[in-house]
Image (tube, rainbow, N blue to C red):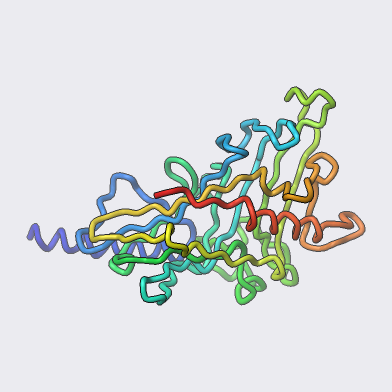
Amino acid sequence: MQMYRWRLFVFLSIVLGMLMGSHGCGCNDDDMPVPEDAGMFELAFVPTASGQSLDNNVPVTNVQGRPFYTEEFLMYVSDIVLVKENGEELLLAETKLYDLGNGDEAKKTSHGDGAYATFVGPEVLGTFRGVKFAVGVPARRNHQDPTSLPPENPLNASYGMHWNAQDGYQFISLEGRIDDSPNMDGQNYDTHFSYHLGTDALYQPLSFTESQHAFSIQAGEELQFVIEVDVNRLFFSATDTIDMVTQNLTESQNSPEIPNGFDLSQQMMDNLVKGALFKRPF
């Protein structure tokens, strides 16, 4: 009877992990043991601002010395793949919504430091070259009806990330307030910023498969693959800096209300993939 109960526990744990890996935002329970014949893999994103810890409603400083704070920082990550030693690719999830501001509990995937998606099962056992994923929602899913999806699906309309059938989803939603005063003393947060980056053209595949990203997972083990997201790096490159006070709005396309909306979105997405994501050492 004891052996039967243990096997049942292992089976249910694996099924639960697989469901987490394919729907919504799976949260790992730190107290749950990894099944003896399975492994646990977590893809984590830790938000920072030039080394400062980033949490919603907590002021940090941008590269121009201005205090600001986020009120929302959400990011879609899609086509999460483990690359095996022989080059074969194992798809773990089609789309996850990461809450990088530790905000709304309904969208939160985090435990501890950062936001995590957890995958449990025998399929994550072995040796891997690294991880591939993309920031955004792929075109094959970007223009579907969000009201037709189940509530636990991260593309469901309830998450508030869908624009319309033409433009699809916001890939990143970053909102907050910034001190616009001349002395930048953190006493005046009158300017609201709202950056909504999206559309098919901004979908960004990424690969972390260099030798330093290789890892192995043995039965009963857990591995965290942690990527730091430096929000400040969204706003500058080697040649340009975005002013969060005067350039405080983006949308999916240029419009009379936001004439440089798409251009600024593209600039920020380029900054994200070229400088804002850092793999933390194991």
